[in-house]
Length: 482
Image 1 (cartoon, helix red, strand yellow):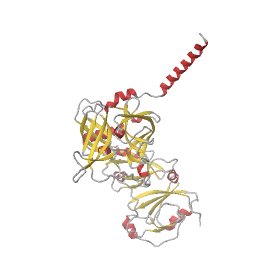
Image 2: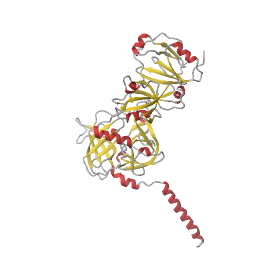
Image 3: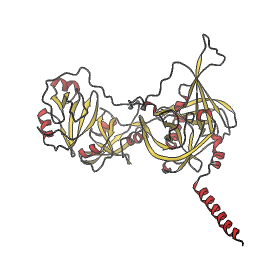
Image 4: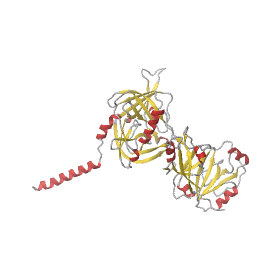
C-alpha cells in the first residue's frame, strides 16, 4: 500500500462513519409523507360577505398588540361572486382556506371549527385533484373541532396515535395547505405539552416549533410512526405568520369530540358549578400549604352539583374522580370530559385539612365567566380611618346585607394611593386568610385588629365579592404599624 492510499482509506472510512452518524441523528420523513400524505385534504369555503370581519378578540388580553398574538390562522380574501361584476347588485364573497384529514374511508373528515364556520359552501380537494362538496356533520366551538363529510368511498385514511405518549423534544410533522399550497410538509419538535391558552378551558394543547401558517388550520400533526397525534389549530404571532410557536389539539380530545358529533350532533360536557382561580405561591403561603397546587374555589353556584355535594368557597380541589388537579386549568378539562350524571369524589383541602366530598356531575349548558364590574347603585357609607392595607372600609348596613344576601362583610369605601391590595370602591371583603386560618370579617374593629397583629412581611389572602362574582386577592406586605 503506497503512502497516498494510507491516507485515503482512513479519510473515506471517517467520512462514511460521519454520514452514518448524521443519518442516525437526522430523521427521514419521506416514508411518512408517502404513506400518509394522501389522507390530508385542502378545504376551501365561500361565504357571502355580510360585514367586514374584525381581528379575533382574545378575552383576558387587553393590550392591543397582544390581541394579535393568539389567533386562529385562516386567510380570508374578499372576491366577487361567480358571474358578478363590480356594479350594483354584485354579491361579494369571502374565500377561506384550511386543511383537514380523512378519518374514515366513506368520507368523514376532521378539521377545525373555525375553518368551516359560517361557510355557505365547503369544497374539499384531494391530492389526486378530485374535488367534492362537503357538508358539516357537527362543530364544537369550545374545542374548535368540526366533522365534515364528502360523498366518496374507498378513501385513504390516517392512523391514530396516542398523544399522551408524546415526549417533549420528540420529532413531529405537519402536513397541510399553508397559503393554499397543498400538501406542504413541515417538521419540528414537541416544545411542551398540556399548554393552557386564553379562554381555551377544555384543550391541553401540544406546543411545537413546527412551521405553521395560514391554511394549516385543521391539518394533522404526525409522530415519527406516521400516526396522527394532534390537529394544528393556533399560532402565537405578532405578524399573523409563523414565529416558532404553534399549538395542536391532542388527538384523544379530537376523537372524543368527533364521536359525539357523529352520534348526537353535539358535545355533552360535565359541570359542577364553581368559579375557580389559580393557587399562586402567595395564596399557598397564606393558606398554609406546602406548595402551590390545586384549584381554589372562590364561589359556588347556589343549587349547583357542587353546592349540593357540600363544596365550599375557599376549598382547594386537589383531585377530581381520582385525577390529580395540579393547577386550576386542569379542572375544567377533567370535569368537562366527565359524563353528566356520574357520581364522583372530590378531594379538597378545607382550612388546612383534607377531606372528600361527592358530587353528581351536571351538564354544561353555557360558559360562565367571572365579571369584574363594580355593583351598580352602590351606597356610600360613613368613612372610617384607612388601615394597614391603605383601605377605608365600613360595615354593611342591614339593608345592604339583605340586598347582597350576606350575613357579614366589610365594604371598601375608599382606596388610598399607597394601598397594598388591588381593590376598588364597592368591593366587599368577606374573609381574611393567613397561615391557614380563615377569619370571617364581621366588623371594622375585628379587621383592623387582625391586620395589626400581622408582621410587616405577612402574606394574606382576602376573599372579595365584586358585583355577583367573588375572587381571592393576595396581599404581600403591610404598611408599618402606626
